[in-house]
Length: 365
Image (cartoon, rainbow, N blue to C red; front, side, top):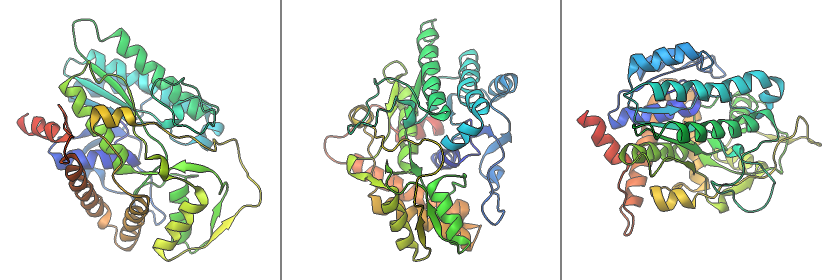
């Protein structure tokens, strides 16, 4: 896994661990929390610090590990930072993808690759209906454009290197506005709220009217897992782009989300800026996930209230006791997996491949 040290990478790695996988990966140094706490990733994974922009290092690592399934999550993930660091953003998000896919195609053990991109890969026209997987790639800002480019790179490798006598399943997973414990990025709503609350400072909202379809990290990660399992089962059928977004009713304003989070925490104060500041940010973007629902048996399972409560509960528990970092993460993964299994057990829902079958393959190996 690339980006194993990041926010979503840690959740995906922890879930794979609990399924019985041997998780190896790399990334930059993990971000520290407000108190300077940095999680011990080596307690959970076989992980090393490495830069995705180093093509030779990526190739050598993949050849040494000889993985069967590759999840590519390493990225420069911030829109506002991309304005200040466009070269770094494109080098990481575009050429980093090239480095991973080229290493994967040259390593005979690799059977499937899931490239995790973003909902912002689409050419956002700010219309009121959700984007489907065949919509045009684009991007107003360097970050969004880099994710659109990453999708084009993925499609090029899929078309160019899947017909040479070897079946290599290459797919992409698109999600966005992901919330959950463990995210300490700058200029991101939930971490900014948590830092302010823990410092007993007011939360300042830049764009309170902006609408986002918020989803919990486990909902996005469950999509990546399901896609990886499906690719191992049938690499040709599932080799394409996939949306993993919340339901349409879950799109709420920044103001509503922030107030709900403060209310659940029962701590904090909100201040709204009088005028919008900073560079352009998309006001509205939503995904159509009907393809994932129909073909991967995937759906977002948490209510908006539960997403916020699980997020606050993680940060609050870890702020009180840093030893709760991995424990709370594991507990929430188990709770979500139980919810998932209950949903899949409903009449009319079955899959040729699932995370359950992925776990069986891992245990058999």
